[in-house]
Amino acid sequence: MLNTIESSPNATLEQLRAGLAHTGTAQFGSCIQQAVCNVLTAQGLEHAPDRIGVSWGFQYGPGADRLRSGERWLAGVARLSALRIQRQRFDSATAAFAAEQSALEGGSPVVVAVDSYDIASPHLGRTHLMHAIILVEWGQESVTVLDPMNEPRPSLLSLDTYRRTRASAVARDFELITFGGTPEHGYSATEALAALHTDAMTHRETGLADLEAFIRAVESGQAAPDVADVAAERTYAQKVIAAAAREMPGLESIAAKTDALARRWYFAHTMGMEADGQSAQRMVKVLRDLGERERRLLDELAGTAAALGLGPADTAATTGPTQLVSLITSVLARQTDLATERLEPGDDLWAAGLTSLESVRVMIGLEDELGVEFPTALLARETFGSISALAEALDGLLPTTSNTTEGQVGR
Image (cartoon, rainbow, N blue to C red; front, top):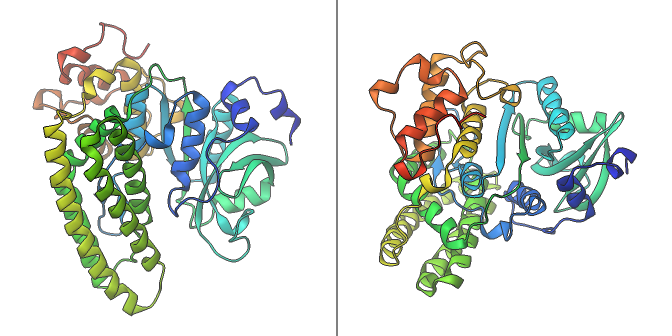
């Protein structure tokens, strides 16, 4: 263990090094969620595995390498908890490693994607699979990492090994997740379910259309039947609904059906790892069945939520100035090539390299996240001039209960 770790003043890093709360084998595809849950627990968010499943959907488009899930859960957790959570992607190792070191120097652990071929795992030296670990220290010759599934104790990787495994083609380019802050308030399982319900209903039709496009691509041989992301998302959605059902017994039927759906998606993932053409045809049948199951369950979820008075989650009530800045930064990291880790709320985004096409992506991303629509009057260059300007615009679009005190945004 590196000496610098022993003297780290950061409470979250120290808590992680002292022992992980969530370890052991988890379903494939959930390694990222498991790593994030450990960091959230160290930050003080209680019952993290039962609270993060607040996204439900599908994403697929031309040239995509797999069926993606909704992937909005990190932003959802940030809104509900007021924690700072950012997913960032970089085009080069140099930029990614600089961002990792900067985050660690600032006291933030980093969740990164690596290749299981290069780390202590059942796949060591044999199988290339994307896997998530927690980075807690960058030293002169090695990095210190925590792997909740395989080696939860702090262990060293040489810099050569680490750079190679981060650069592997299976490791989702150079993606990383950083964390900051402490929860301003906890949130209940029913509040998490309300957020999940809102997300599912908001993205239902576009998501199901993407699922159908993916099925056609698998059927024609244009896409590999990789559904690991969806299997993981449904697994954690099931955890949210099961926890909510313990608070509201009227949700028990939905919890049982979501559990069955999550298991079915995991089965589909297992089938998808087969390589022969026959398995692809079988996969199409399984996927079409899953599409029907999704539709029926979403219908029942909507009806049950209405009957129990859950309704849409009150996004505005949990979206204040700090959360808006965090959310906007997260969307910028996903939808643009900007170096968001170096951006301040008042910085000129156009001068930082924002393009017109990226601004459209950012607008759509923010509309999806918050369930709002930018009016024509706000579709101006000034609105997208800075994170603060965007936060001010969004604050005016949200219900008045969320409106912030003038001048707070960006401070």
